[in-house]
Figure: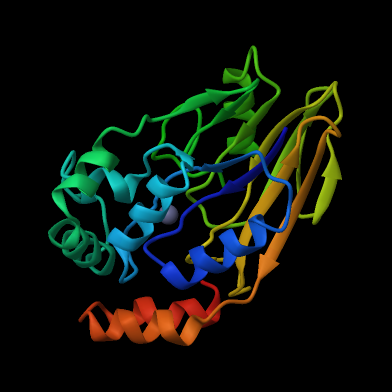
Length: 240
Ligand code: ZN
């Protein structure tokens, strides 16, 4: 099977369309989304519609949870809070319902998909120390894809040693365990403004990251026109 793994779209229609166009160039059998379809950007309904139409298998992210009304944004900063409440108001009831029904985490084939971490969908994995705690919970599974940090990276557990890598492609070693973050489609935060996702070929045991330029200025203009905080537009061209 060839999977495309995407995450953290954040209502960025321009980025999502560009990524899906690229995914169509590969012989992808299934596209998987690690959550945060909405929040921050100006096109929440359009992004949810595409996820539904294309049958992208998705889990729920922390922004999706608030946008559909399951939780209030108590732990969000003021800019993120204003954007997620705008998103809640803007989403159609069908799309709120769709988000509401997405699972927290899931087993696909023999790998796990989570938004933040295995222990807690809302937790950020930013270091090898944090990755080690999560690896301990992966008793039966060798591979877990996670998002939430918007930073493209992966961690390997081998012979009780945890290491972090940023390579653009790698082969899966059968004796190791992996925590793999595809980066963010709609709001990358690794100082590279290009959209990020990955292709996972299960037969070849191969992972390849892809970065793509997209129409950032249109996405920024829409954020400003929607009356959302200007900083949400600015950060897209900074990649942070
Ligand atoms: Zn996110």
